[in-house]
Length: 321
Ligand code: TXA
Ligand code: MG
Image (cartoon, rainbow, N blue to C red; front, side):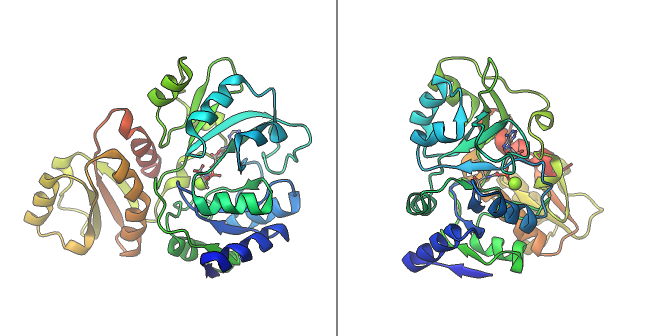
């Protein structure tokens, strides 16, 4: 796989997408594996490269809210309000699919997930190709989402031809998915934009269903798991006798001291900031890093509760199975 950069890289990517190929692109959330959403043959290349089951629907990325009506029907006013407030950005809206859109991209479903991404390179590719781009995270099925071009290369190898390098992703966690196909808006996957921000924007309550996996096929626990076994531990329980080859993902000073006192090697410790946004940004990256260091278990210091940590806690609970 080639790592493409700069203006020349952008042109190459545009040409490849117009020719029907799939290629990895940076978004502000995680790297995506993009292809022309209107061509079932191109979409099929995404499923093949990822080894993803054909009934797991993809998100379609569009250049602006003006294109909503090309992809969806019965678009409620609230969708435009949300678009105005949060697009471009890490919010995906689930709407009723327009009949002309091939079922290949929606896994045969009558609904379609749409978002306008914020990364300037992705937006430029959308504008230059004039396409809607289907793009799931650029990892093989059941592996961790990549937040750098190097992780895309590591995970996908020669299963795809190229990745456009846009630097490390700003948010590091996948977009919030909001279902607008029933009476009350409902969060199907928590992400960088939380419930209160959504409720404030639309001035109505937003549901958070207990059981995400039913409404979002493919949003299963195994998608977010590193190779090593992941355990979320209370601070006091981080250091235990067993688990000689454990790695640690921590954020507090107390945890640093506890691990140092126990003589844990520095290479097996990754410390992230103790606030939700930068912790979320570094989460997948840190799990990749600990995985690469060859540990058999990753112990994560239990983050705080509360809304700002919801997306982090959601991914951690899935990653720990
Ligand atoms: O931040 C993101 O959303 C990233 C970047 C690349 O944009 N994309 C991403 O895609 O996370 P993916 O395929 O890894 O996750 C998309 C999720 C899946 O859980 C899928 O089931 C759900 O969106 N989804 C897509 N279309 C749907 C539909 N029509 N009905 C229900 N769920 C849908
Ligand atoms: Mg994914």
